Image (cartoon, rainbow, N blue to C red; front, side, top):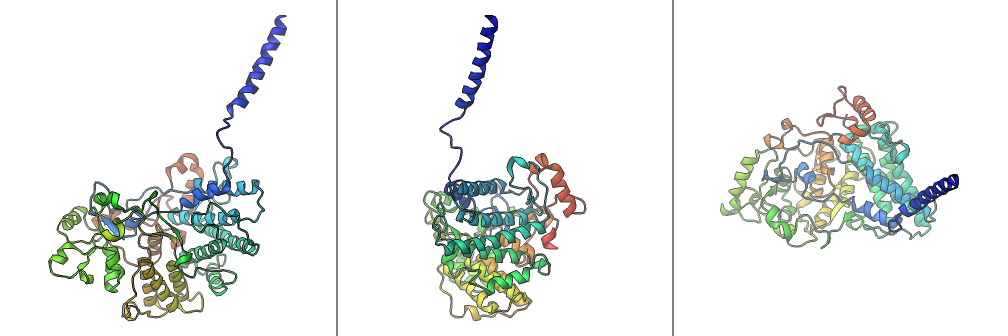
Length: 490
């Protein structure tokens, strides 16, 4: 009898365990998320905003109030997007689970997103895990691939994405939903894919002769074959984030009192506009009060003044109180909640990238035409009328496929990056030295402009052996120093 009771107890316990395993599952929690919902989240994460740390590092504007921020380049760890990339993998898997074919819109856009985020991350830190990454629990300590291998993979993803989109467009596939940028229009996504490819190739300008990357050949093939590699044709094709009354533009009526006088325009940016008599100056900035009081009309470029990012912050604050510096435009940036669209990939940038590649001799085409089209499209974004003599004045008229012409292209591209595209303006300046960034006690870091970010501390906690091996491979002393050059800059 005792044995029988014991047996019943064991059976009861086992039954209870089984019941608990069933009850433990919460029917209210989803075990999967539809691909379109994940896509919406991942795409939203691409928006890098405006009037933030990146834009100060780009030397577009300055903080003059130390309590809130400074203009120092004392960088630390980068923010890597591996969680977002794992969501991309999840999105791709859910599309297949829901019955999609191997070649489907989510997989094609997923390849673009992989290329986009990996480019962003490797430009920030250097070597990264690629082959062993994004495998979840199967590889929790991935080895690092070289920065070159990262770019080889990025270019392959973009090539494959373009091929997949060609197939899907030919089949009139309309199944992409959750797309907050192009509303499922795969023809626009294909243009974005190839526009990103040109950006990546331009970033590799110091590696143009690498036989594995084939930068020159890929560039020439892309711009010479619009049937195979469609590109953006106007601002309407831009990949851009549209702000709303629910997700407000970073500068809006609600924070006018907090930011309007605590931030002023940067000399690096303002001086380029002034030297070119650029109408965009009057749209993005306010005239300096001291200049107006001195009798200089607001219609003159001489009424506008930017502060050096390297200026001591106390000195800058004092000069701001005296009205010596220009603020951001109240009308453009504080009059409503939706502000201006924020580019992720713009048509203007693409035009300047093509002009740069041609200037460097990578392809035979008309660099001047692309350069001028880049200027016109940027002016159009601001609603600025192009003055009749703007393109013919000595500082703007294209000086040919030489160093002077390249400087003109790079300066105009820098201007077009204003409050857009995250750190792209910084990465281009780091690569070319144009425009010259201003330094001094206000920029910190021993008055040096850094070259890179550090790896996140979490990598040293969870993947110490591999991240340290990557550092030793990249830098002689193996230090994670923000002032060191890495492969792409050598």
